[in-house]
Image 1 (cartoon, one colour):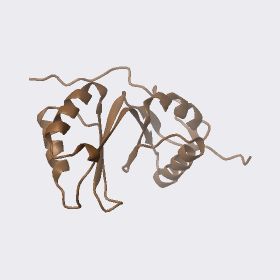
Image 2 (image 1 turned 90 degrees about the horizontal axis):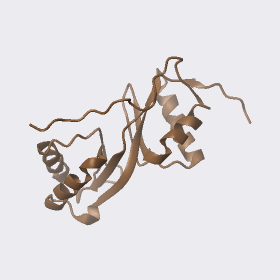
Image 3 (image 1 turned 90 degrees about the vertical axis):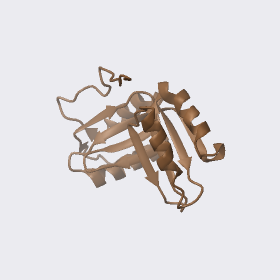
Image 4 (image 1 turned 30 degrees about the vertical axis):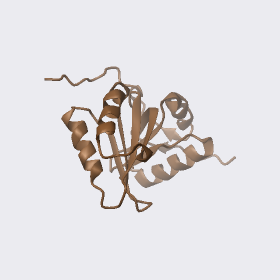
Length: 172
């Protein structure tokens, strides 16, 4: 096996346990996702992850909400313009966020290769200049992070992967 130098990154963080909802529009000009997002906002449902894709020609949107919000999201879906055959719900996902530290493209390729080799599921993926956010099975986050440390170098003073506190929005 070739001895590779680890890629230095700024950090890794885990989300709380989330539910991922993926909705496919009926046509390229279907605006029902905007109506759905408006309904979620009206109910003060936080969306910590949102990703839109048009790769197949039919727009598809994936978003994550806290697990405790699944019942309210299902109610909204039942009364929105989406039909059941256009909705996929994954009930236990976690967002693994990696902070690339100037290695964004190199890190993205490494992470996708890593997930493929280890057969870890990638339910959705979003990137920005400062982070790569990947949704996978919540139960696998610790195992993934442990194995990632074989190819990634974290800062010496890295904080825990999981947040020590939980934020909640107070309804007024």
